[in-house]
Length: 146
Image (cartoon, rainbow, N blue to C red; front, side, top):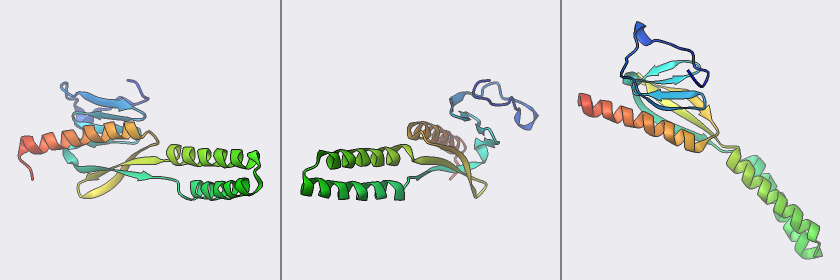
């Protein structure tokens, strides 16, 4: 199997109709389970799923304040180096803000929320969350659960 997953069988058997929906970045979402490197989560036990995103705050904020100081100094002195320094700081702050974000998949399993998987790839998190939510909705519609 790819992605470094160990071959595991849930409850002593493996469903031959299980379909892999997403498999990338340390997580695999199948029609039956969410599989991480730490553990498997059976989708019939998952009540809901959500995404928690944490963005860096202080580093980019401090860089933007320093960039503003350099811009003011640049206007007062007319020195090109102050404008260049401000541009570098603003660019660095924007990159830090964008690339420093962390996204956590949180599953409600049996009434208890668990942080299941962490990534910096926002698009991959959207794919994983959409796959999990689609399976939960399909289960609810099939069983008629509230």
